[in-house]
Image 1 (cartoon, rainbow, N blue to C red):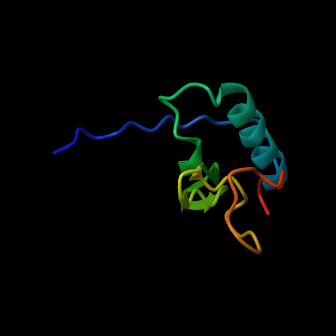
Image 2 (cartoon, rainbow, N blue to C red):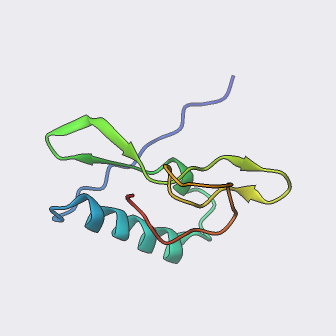
Length: 88
């Protein structure tokens, strides 16, 4: 049995989903080297509706290339590079 993982909830003062998604992209770009952070599992939620979450990235496993870094609802094939569209 593996121990439970911990989630860090990081509230912001941002008021749009697009801005919050852009911040998530910036955090992933600047902190992507920190292996303790699983950016592929990043979700967004409104402050008063935290149980309703929007997934940002697809994160599907790729053969020998890690995980897909494109947005969750992307068109076409998965890819190890992002398409710079965070929140759809």
